[in-house]
Amino acid sequence: MNKFITKFLILFFILTNNIIAEENIMILKLKDGDIKIELFEDVAPDHVKRIKQLAKDGKYDGVVFHRVIDGFMAQTGDVQFGNSSNDQFDLKRAGMGGSDLPDLKEEFSDLPHERGTLSMARSQDPNSANSQFFICFKEASFLDRQYTVFGKVIEGMDLVDKIKRGDQNNNGSVSNPDKIISFK
Image (tube, rainbow, N blue to C red; front, side):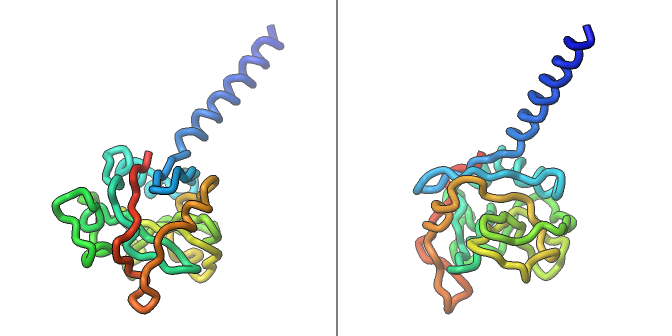
């Protein structure tokens, strides 16, 4: 009987762990393919909850990468002005909007901004993150403990590298930008 209970508990733990792990994996679909992302719910629970909610509601589908700086990062997530499939789309204003949900309180951590890190964009106010985020092309330690890291690319970083770059002289602003096809 004890062996049965022990085996049952081990199996239960393995299955539960896998279900939790799968809940924190998302697929960001771009024109060149799928990027697999792990979300860090234990590190930034409110930010992960927000990303999941906006993705579930389809708010990221059609959103452009409005600011892309070679050797630094690709920024997206303006569901208000950056969504190419809605009436408010305005490429000149992309990066100035967010969702209709309230801004989030910072959840800074010791996780580094390294290649593949997903982190929330914000204004100068640390508690102003809303829907916008960026993916680091390479290490950006000067952002550590100042921006909320909420995830990391675990497959498909080569596809992130293909995102159209912006104008270096115009803070990475992108004309005819790539966009998120879906985020699920």
